[in-house]
Image (cartoon, rainbow, N blue to C red; front, top):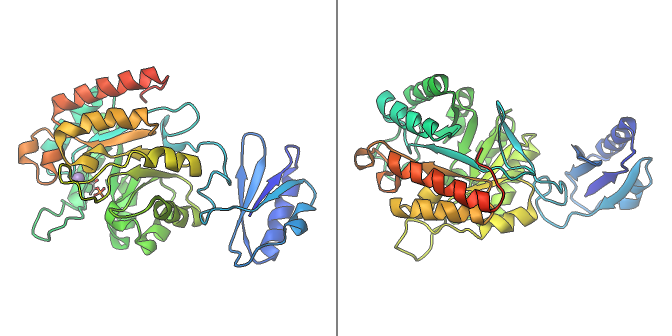
Length: 341
Ligand code: PEP
Ligand code: MN
């Protein structure tokens, strides 16, 4: 249920509606918009009596939300949400900026992290990715440098003025990771780790939520709802490919997810053509396509020596490849009147 206030409604009237909703044992979520405030309601098991709220002073309309997800739905919030990262860097929003996040799959050493950071910063990139805690299929492969990796990321931020995105793989290390990073990444394997999602929802930090390897888009949006329901509205969605019968790629990057999600949700959505294809030579073409299909940005893996990488070397772009990718993304963006951030 969504209570839409009159354009001229006073703050006291908005507060009064919220108080009534609370007294009914429900949770109000005021959503100030450019034109008017709306108040989302969650927590109801049965249908709420629309008339009861519709007659309150300052109320224009009461709408039943048809989707099972509420706070992430466009019905609740018609305008595109812009997720602010800080220092003028953001993802999504009305003027359709293109945001690129780039860096190695894993932070392996200070030298490796710095070489890649220098190269991506030279291309104008503002957000640097790198895993310190790695969710690996095999327990015998490189698991990440952990806290040492976070310290290196902090140095990268300091040295190059880049924002940092890194993955939190469990509730035990979430607070530590959040204390270092600018964006918390929740990986595909954790998309339905509901205790982790709830804890992330209580952070005051932007979150990148990746689609699970076999998750529907409805399930992705329900997972985002867990985060918003706890109070954190700064969620960026990520299409990173799903498991199919295809064996020419590691995963199948589902580009149709972008327009589908944009129709149903106000949250920004980016793609990950690195994990979405698993092959270096497909990352740049699928990055171009992602921008063409309306993604708010991309996240890609770049390595100074891909052949020696400790994880995901086969899909890592070389530093030269990355230069080409940025030039291509810029060209596609300009056709659509979109600027690289
Ligand atoms: C990653 O970004 O390195 C990663 C592990 O991604 P995903 O969760 O999409 O597999
Ligand atoms: Mn990776």
